Length: 163
Image (tube, rainbow, N blue to C red):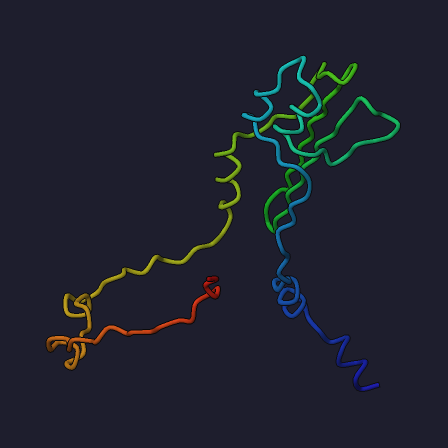
């Protein structure tokens, strides 16, 4: 009974401490990232292989929709709103006929969004003294190197000479 009564005496301050401490959650990247530049490279009349070369293999390729490829991309990071984008490519007679896409970032914008939200500390100043930049030469090797006699090695013939 004493233990149960002690649990019920927790006040709001200890509950706030529990809600402040959250576990680390890894970044989750799923699907095919398609940039604005890749989508702009698609032209009507391209073959399936040409589209695959530009966008990669589609994430979703349904047997019920043989003339449609779906490229879905999601990115989840702790403390930041999840990103979700979709690009759908339609074919007619194995030729690209239409592309539907969400608003896509450029490659540079996407790379910049990967670094946003990360906490970085101050960058340390890297300094070396002029003495530490000089190469370390041992005293024995500072003297003139002694002449080394060349090795003379004889090997047996690979084939015996025929007379």
